[in-house]
Image (tube, rainbow, N blue to C red; front, top):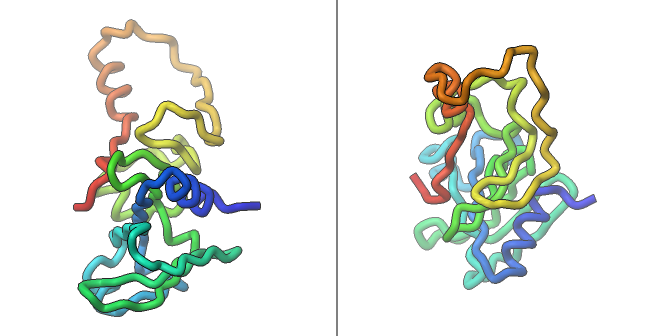
Amino acid sequence: MVHPVQSVIESLQAAGRCPRLHVNAMFDGVVCPDFIRDQWRERLIIDLDPSYPLDLTFLEEGLSADLSFGGYVTRCSFPYGAVYVVADRSTGRGIVLDQNMPDSVKRSRYGKGDENQKPALRTVGGDTESDAPAATATDEPEADPTDESQVKKRRAAFKVIDGGGD
């Protein structure tokens, strides 16, 4: 079975797009330069630019590539558990793996929410469906769609990622 991270990367590359990964460089098993880990910690953004000879390799537990950081080229490895967003660099469309996203990123960038309500995998920025679990019904009575408290509650449920770097 192909991991969803690999699937999205390969799909983007096949379409001539540049995959952008959001990676937790502090995750156990990540291999990258110490100065990169120290600088970016849980918010490392990597562009798998097809114009660069990456020597991208997919393994059962993660991916490896030759990456350049300010002209310093090194072989890096990232377990799939370290990758929490895979998106098209130019459009921001891709997937978010909520179960891999560090708590500090959830709190600061996407807001803090109930972990039980978040799907494990969801599509962002696109109109296509994903394999994410469907929403479950609640016992709450249906409110008037213009009820201000319900409007605020619905707005709070939305999450936006911009697809760009910080």
